[in-house]
Length: 116
Image (cartoon, rainbow, N blue to C red):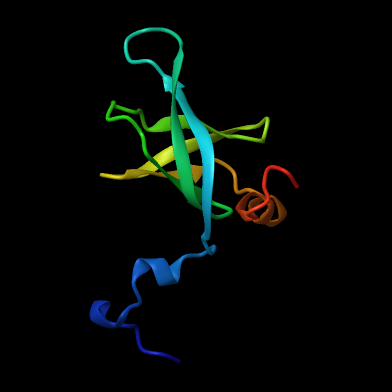
């Protein structure tokens, strides 16, 4: 039996991910409810990595975005409901409400997508 690891001997979070991230460079849109007004608004973005459980999107306009959004990837006619789990200067870390199938994630991460 192993002794519990001390926090200084743990691997960085990136190496402890449950599901591996695939590097991508795909165009998409983030849809969300307007603040104080009925209706949706959207922003174009770029997805730079994806896994079965979430993705990272960047190049968003500096506008308040709520904690729940829909992510639409160019080339797919599907809206993925997502929760914003982290915000950084360069984008949003999104968690899909339901995990995506590995085959779909591999297809999205392929350089030939959406042609394939």
